[in-house]
View 1 (cartoon, rainbow, N blue to C red):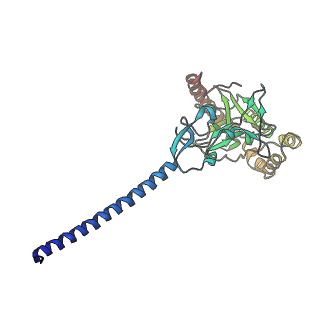
View 2 (tube, rainbow, N blue to C red; view 1 turned 60 degrees about the vertical axis):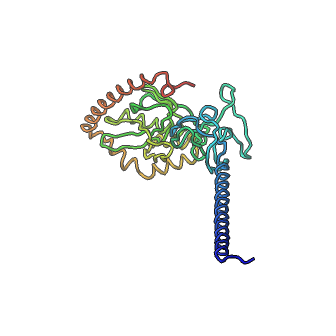
View 3 (cartoon, one colour; view 1 turned 30 degrees about the vertical axis):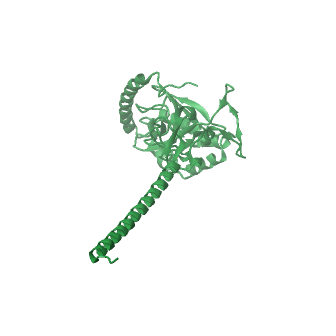
Length: 321
């Protein structure tokens, strides 16, 4: 039966339209499938990053001593940090030269853990990596002892856990670093507890004597702003010849320390700069400086008294062992 030309055109148009619609639909389906695959891959990538990690349970401050059980918790976070880089309870353990964990006991017979402090501030919920903490005990030697001092002028707002330099200022304006970046074990209104090695004890003792005998001098402490990130200052105070002789004959002092102190002495720092500054013939200037120092110290002491009283009972002041 003959087909009407009009019907043929209509049928052809329908077929073409159907094919175009089919192709368009196929393209849409293909795009949707590609998009779904991409979304699934992204979801898998995100899921892979959602891992259970150790994070800070509270805000941790630079220079603060930290405890794994008290200051950390476990949380699921999105990160690509390697788990091996994250801090763990093992970082508080002592290890021998073979990398094996060993047990150390304190003076009361209890198991002892390492002392770790923060290098930087981190907010609660942050992953803390091993390079964010400092092993305080790695800097200790067999001669390290806790010493108490009450003749050093303290900053009005000094608290436990701060890091300080101890400096000696002279009446002519010269200012020497005696000890650098020392951890404040404890402090109150006028006393300070520090961990010092044998050579540091002798060096500070020399500076204390000279602060008493040089009119207008001042032995004082200053705090670090960001202790975790700031490097220790380089001490430039040179001990007297008598103390240097004692240091060179003291079997408790390491050879490296002896060499460093001797090198500083033979550099002629003391005879060229320090001793001329304490010339007893220049009495008028030291007397004026001494009067000014006394007024400054009195003002700082008053402010510190009030500051410490407000913190009494907290962990920020006082020393107990």
